[in-house]
Length: 269
Image (cartoon, rainbow, N blue to C red; front, side):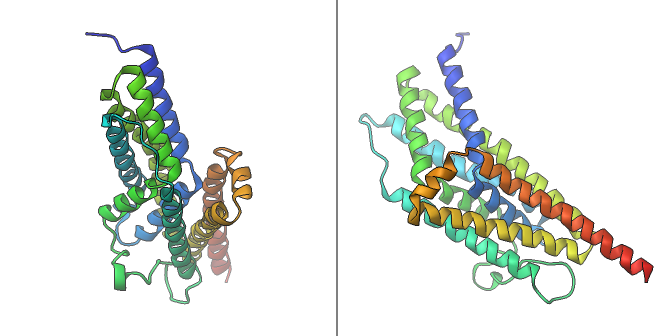
């Protein structure tokens, strides 16, 4: 059996690392948090696997583009309109999830906070794996993602031909599954635990996820209206993504504290 060249192994490792880093982008994490929260009440299994499904849909587009570029005889340029399209999709999705979760957090309905209001025209509340896959695929239609796909495809051609382009796409997807899948699993677990403790706990979690979705949407808008600010934020690397995850964890911690405090007050009475 022929041993795989070291340069190919290094390229695979780089693709995997890029996938992990890409999965830690704030828009990925905030969207997965919102999807997990949105489906937690009706389909807990979909909430748990939202990150994996999102990554698979995202990776399918990247892998397809990798293979297509590798099979083309001439070098192609990434269309400039993809940047605006991908940014618009992510912003609209985050705004929608943010508004729905904040609406649930401040709803006057008794009981646990459940995101509502979209079922009548999109049947989003019931949840479906294809929806999560489709959102992940749409998020891949951005200039940055397509540029990365073109880079890896051209690198595969120079190293050992187009046969490695598909494998690079798989490695990139696996990297995203590690970070996004972990985020989805943890978020679903936090939501399930907080929701079973008290009404106030579920509302705090809805507020945490809704607010972070709107904040990341504003960061997306900065790419259009304030590119200088967006470039400064990108210099922080994965720190903005880690901040998103930390905010959700802080919301969970606060929800536990408030739930226990509320329970203690009721027992004192």
